[in-house]
Length: 315
Image (tube, rainbow, N blue to C red):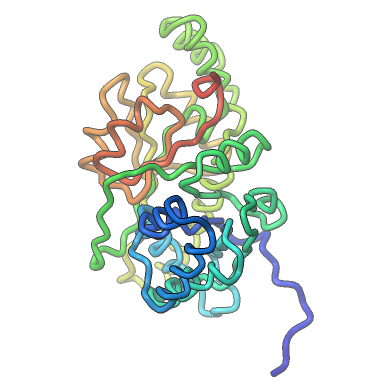
């Protein structure tokens, strides 16, 4: 077999890093590890090697994201790359790789680091989002300035017949920095609105997931190009902003998105209305928010991810 000596380039792709805990249900495996220790955990994984792990909370999101690679004719040039970042060693991680193969997920690259968090490799792999159930790993990644989110125990629905990928973002502390949230926390709602009106033409500083949104937007542009050649094609990606902002602070948020060259398909400026009620209708395959209070309601209806960034997460 001839192998190209050219490096595999990641900079023009949407790269997601996932811990196995985000994509698969590891409850049984984790229980063995906690109750019986590492040696018995190894034996358990070896015995279950050919038993696929159940689907986890981020599975519907990852599956649909990878399906977008059919927009490119060349399978060697995918739009999306999902890399497994695991605390397992390669031997115990083998069951995860076999599970990936069982479900037909197009994930072929992995990093296994026995007992250590692999988050330090996020910039080396050009990762726009790292998903894990491990709070300490996600906190450390955010503290280092990397885009990461903790997948929370959540309700999720994987309708096999629905090809649409619905992604929902909070705005402040997720897509944008927390500058305005600092004003809100220190001076209250009236001053927050006044601050946003004064600075309406000044785009917000980027938050942890700004680059993720930019790369998703580029794939939406590829969809539009594909649609020109295939008029019957139905766009699959739908991006929504679901924020506690309301008028008059909505305008600066929209101006910021425009300055980044992106737009949302939907925007919900809720002004304190419970997000869970709206998301229960919208039914995104994943929702990102920085505030635990919001996530307590959203996680009962949709897959929810905590972005532990900014002033609302400072103890």
